[in-house]
Amino acid sequence: MIVNAIFILVVFFSLLELFCSRKNFFIFLIPLVAMVIFVGIRSVGGTDYDVYKLYFESIPDAIYSYGLGYFGLNYVVKLFCDDFNLLIAVSGMSAVLMQGWYFYKNSNKPTLCLMMFYAVSFIWLDMVLIRQSIAAGLLLIAADFFFRRKNLLALIFLTFATMFHEVTVVIAIAGVILYKTNSRHYIKILLVSVVSLWWIKIIVVYLNQTILHNGNIEAYLSEPPFISGSLLIDFLFACFIYFLSTNQRTLIHEKEKKIYQVIMVLGVGILLVSYLLPVMARLSEYIKFFYILMTVSYISRQEKIANKVLLFVALFIYCAVRLNVFLTHFDGGFIYSTYMV
Image (cartoon, rainbow, N blue to C red; front, side, top):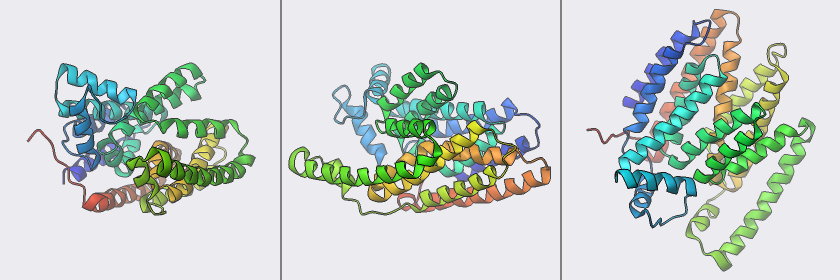
């Protein structure tokens, strides 16, 4: 109930924003603060929650290798206040603030971005994937610097992101390579990448069975091949918006079009990679921010208010269904709880 109540709040302010000629900081701030508080006072978040709590309790003798950045955050919080709930609050609230900042900076309808983000990623990314949520926020800052050609700052924030979630560097390197490469070579790159991954998987399986004997690696590699339904639906939705956007050639500039191309190719790549290695589907959380920006950009470019309203209604229906399907099917049903009561 509370999850949908917050969603309705975000929808309400998104609708107000739709009729504004310019973005309004206060309209954006209210739902953002609600989301920040919502994620900050939670007390559970999927199966990883107990593992991260055990990790926190083991500090300074970390029982797992979760990256220097995440270790440092745990260490500092435990040093000043030995409270795992505070760690969850700090990490979750910081992540949402960074993500919200990126939407506000890069969209003229940032509250609408929040609405879509809340439905397709927020609960999973910021309440369950604790380390990855922080890494995603840092990666967005790195991306902002990269697009403004401040490469040193981009590299610094990418390094920070990798210190929280190591595979962040994979999506970053892939994105930069595609951005710097002529789009005519994208199919070749995809084919080479997938074939290479297949061989790498075989090699890693052999090394783990003979030398490493790592239980986590074995669990990940032994998962049967499949494609996540939600991942496929989000990608197909993004494909539809991409098709509509590229038909408005006079309304999008070349840089924006190039970014969209890169995101779509990354989407295809993640689909293929996650089929071979299902855990890699989590990489899609990094590019969903750009799916969202592309969708909201298309809606905001409509000149007729009637078209904007119709598209808003369609997006609202998609988001409402997408959110509640996730809530129903996640790990037997997602239940929000807080340590405040």
